[in-house]
Length: 241
Image (tube, rainbow, N blue to C red; front, top):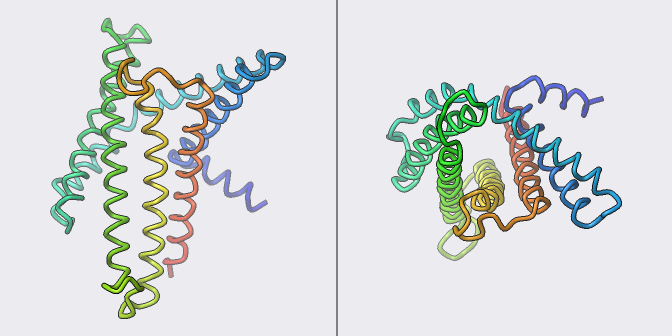
């Protein structure tokens, strides 16, 4: 019952619903791709699962039509990151926010072109939006790795042992933050693999992933993202009075 209540609560929020749709879509692509490629007798089931995956992906594209304002508010609040102590993290965050902000209108134009709302070449706008997403993921991965290394340095004394002067509660908080950054790093790298695959052919491994591998990378990323969201939720409940 608790699991059912948690699922219902997740579906009530936009982010929770998006995570579940994303995970289900990539799982369908993974299973469908495996069935089509490895199980000829189940290929029809596999093709149907791939259709479901494509429709769920399209659903998320339509839902992102309403994300611009939320992204703009976040970008405006962060600004130039004057409250950020680490100048490198500040630069990465500003660049990442800029890439994310530009990503949405590019994707909207590509969607509108596919829907025949705008008479423009959708392929160019899909390529541009994917390139911006790739840049954002790369910056996010570097940011997570840098933060993780900085936290590990703070946790350890010059002799390589845990800094005894830190309170135990602060050590646990920093360890939890490191774990969160590891999840972010792995999730971004899995998404980055797919993002490069969707770039024009000739760029690294673009266009070389079979459907099941795209599904696998997306499923890994989605599960890691859901684990991170669950950890954040538990931490928020533990910190609340």
